[in-house]
Length: 219
Image 1 (cartoon, helix red, strand yellow):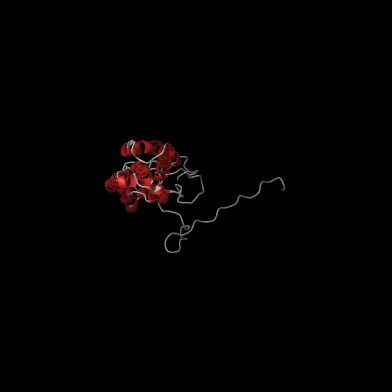
Image 2 (cartoon, helix red, strand yellow; image 1 turned 120 degrees about the vertical axis):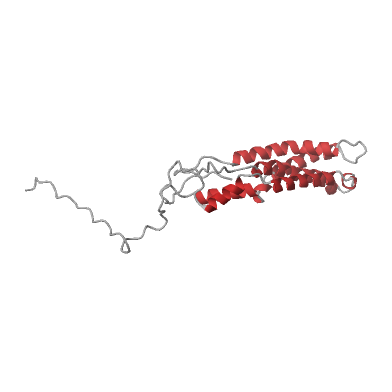
């Protein structure tokens, strides 16, 4: 008798359908999304993707206006020839900040979503990261801001600037341009804000509607 195999274990009967059926676990969705489901799934996703699929022209126009204002400030003779040293640095810093914001913000204001392709992170998390692009644009802004400032201010032999002060104008414009490139991430355009909200909605769920933890390299 000991050599006989153990009796089979019977599976519990299925739950009855109808009002007595057990409710679905919290956090689960009734629809299982396939990997090829690349279109917006809900009305909210369609709205966000629509906002992120067209350039934010108002934001871009505002950046150009800020550049024009900074150039006007730097061109004021009362500031460039002032006897106050901090006043003579207003122009380079203003040009650096606005130019950096333009270089960094112009990339954020272009379309960030397509109604025909809405991606999402895989189960283990996405490996794509935005900080390399942000850092590259900040370096570009820091390198070109002194050039813009030199074009605006020119070289006036009658100005009270010393050689050391001219060198510090280059440093001030470069540092301001580098830092200004990150300002649009604090005051993002409509396209970037909508794309980030769409990522927030989709990140954290897999195809079964359950939550997971993974590496998400976004700035």
